[in-house]
Length: 177
Ligand SMILES: Cc1cc2nc3c(=O)[nH]c(=O)nc-3n(C[C@H](O)[C@H](O)[C@H](O)COP(=O)(O)O)c2cc1C
Image (cartoon, rainbow, N blue to C red; front, side, top):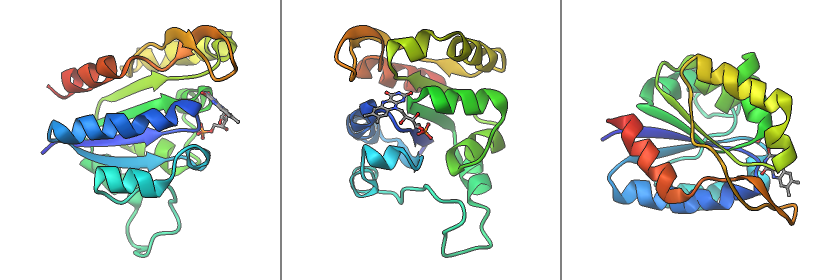
C-alpha cells in the first residue's frame, strides 16, 4: 500500500481535505496527515484522524516516545508528500529551507516527490515573492497543482482558489505511478 503524507496548512480551504482523504482512502492509499499549528484553526485533528484512520502529526517534541525522530521516520515512510492546501507561508518557508515545524522538517528530510496545491488570496498568490518562491521550488523538482479563478474567502473572485479536487486526485495518482 502506498503511503501519502498529506500536509495541511492554515488556509480556509483546509476543510476540503476531508474529501481528498476520503477519495484517496477509497482508492486504497494510506494517508498520514501532518498539520501545521495554524491548520488546526481550520480543521480538527479528530476529524482528520477519523477519516484517515491514522494518528495526525503536528508536534515534533510532544511525542510519547522521545527516541523517535518523528520527522525522519515520516519522511522515510512517504511515497509521496502532498501539501494541500498550501499557504503562501509554507511555500515561502520551503523555498528558503526553513524547517521550524514538523511539516517543513518532514519535507526537507524526504527524498520522495512533493506535490503542492496552493490556496490563498489572489494578491498573495500573484505577489512577486510568492511567484519567485514557487519558481524556486519548481527548479528543485517540486510539482504544483495550480490554483484556479474562483470565489475566495475574502469575498471576491480571483486566482488563488484551491484546484478542483478531481484534478488534485488525478495529479496524486499520476505522481505515484
Ligand atoms: C480566515 C483566514 C483564512 C486564511 N486563509 C489563507 C489562505 O487561504 N492561504 C494563505 O496563504 N493564508 C491564509 N491565511 C493566513 C494563514 O493562516 C497564515 O499566514 C498562517 O501563518 C499560515 O501558517 P502555516 O503556513 O504554518 O499553516 C488565512 C488566515 C485567516 C485568518
